[in-house]
Amino acid sequence: MIFSLIAATRNRPIELKRFLDSLQGQAPARFEVIVVDQSSQAEFDTNKSILTPDRHSFPIMHIRSEAIGLSRARNLGMQHATGQIYAFPDDDCWYREGYLNDIESWFTSHPQYTFLSGQYSEPNIVNPHSLMGHRPLASAASAFHVRSVSLFVQASLITKKHLCFDESIGAGTALPAGEENEFVIRIIRSGGSGYYSSDFITYHAIFRDQANDDDSLNRSEEAYGYVLGKHITCPTIIARAMIGYGRSLIEAFGRNSKVNRWRARSRGIVKGLRTARNSHRAEKAAE
Image (tube, rainbow, N blue to C red; front, top):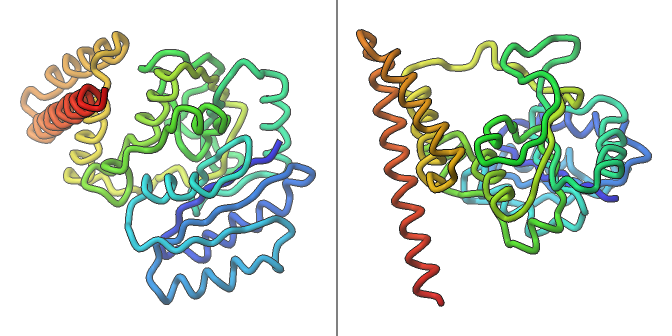
């Protein structure tokens, strides 16, 4: 089993080096690293020296991408991937020693699953945002438990169904969230099934200092609304959308920030519905 680790990077050479250094402790797991670089020219040149193949004991492909966007980078990386398992680490995450060996053992023991998702956290710290425990991920709504840095997917279904990330959402776009959830929903709708286990932890900052300004929160809310709208025909997505609406309306009374967030999600749902409608029309026209 070979892993294809597809990492998008933009102006983070120090963090990228830490990730690559953590891969030295993954033997005997076999893997390739595909770095899709959207950095400025100066940072790209810095990364070029970090990514020199003779500095590492594993194969590295360094791809320059002028187009900005996390989803675009991951799609480009998948076009070059040759492994049986795809993973999508951020450039600022890192793996504990032996992590990929444990992932490989899990897939060997659970061949019925298309993908595995775990949590993210920092060493010896409990992430309060993480779902704890173990559960199958078989419904569209369950895809919202997935975080991309801890997502491992069998490549066979991806290539067979020509699945990719929606490039209109994700970091680097006007809708900077939800890309992994939308991707996993389409995996499930294409016949795949997954499993979540909090035992598998990808190291990543817990975002204790993340921006919580209203604009950032509203754009993320709009992105999740887009995902809901795009897949509103799934019964579990309808239920999730209605529950979310009810909760948001209750919270909104007397709080302008909550009203704005509710409006943002509504805008996103409308955009998602339009995307789904246009895709359906295009499929009909192609028949």
